[in-house]
Length: 393
Image (cartoon, rainbow, N blue to C red; front, side, top):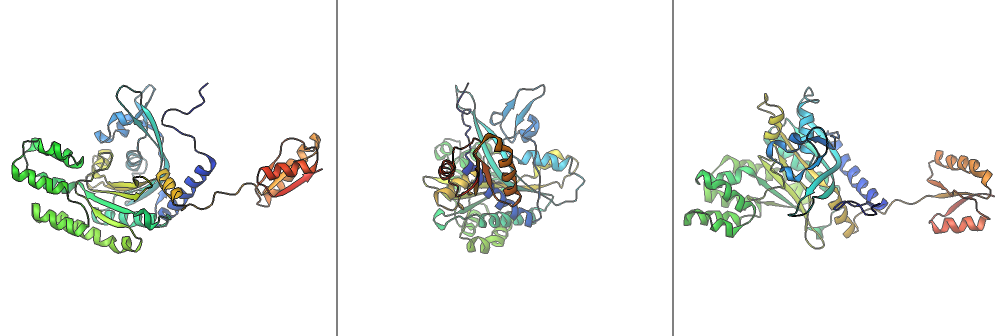
């Protein structure tokens, strides 16, 4: 019998579970105040749902052996979008939903079996809101939720903001066959790969300028306008950033615009975002998301106005970050009282006494074996960190 969990999986100890629950409850209370209702999609879905119309590589999905093509969800958005467009289709829009639960990723290395990665997420999905209002609400909500986590200034929280349309503007003058490899090189920060493409000196110079372009949003947008000319998208992003700038400043969260920033999955067709903190050894991404109108429209082919935007917090990354900075509350206390007894025939009486304490709201536990004397029971209570003994002698 195997004594270790599957490769990539791990056991969560009581203090880990308690801290994760504290984080999820804290975030869920923020979502609730903003009018979001909780949902829980199934862990197992049809593969065509999980692959989100080609946005998620099948190799990232842990497949389940069954009569039909099934897999474990690698993220939450596609499943919630499916439910919103089917079972929840009659509900008035905008539709505000929040969730917490595990996602499962297949991490594959050449010549090896898939490595399982289970991650706990907490997040929101906003369906049917216009791009301007929906994006602004999402950023405000993300900042509000982050503000209810005890992040420290030393962790230097930074909200990275991007938009799929920015690179489209940069690349639109290139030949169609070069746009995809250029986008890939820019998103991967691959300067050498960019220089190997058949670009003119002027084209290469402009793309290398974009490769280095990230930082304070107003400055980045100004430089982009100098490279490609004016655009309504620049004005829209400037207004979006302005709508959250004061909130971010008051919370000590830096805003950074990055035209080449891309999230892990190709779900998004508009705004993209990521909240990053300085970890003990490397930057830690604790939340990410964006706008995914095309995904929702795949589930609602007769509704050209269908839209969606959302984000998810990586709960265990948040927990580990807060543990390193002593930002979590003290672990839950153990039992307040130990019930112990001297003779086997006193077991039922001891259980009755235990439940009396429970009805009074106390956390009490039973020592299941008879103790020879009270001093033995006191020693057991002391070893278990329990101060109060209820002794049936």
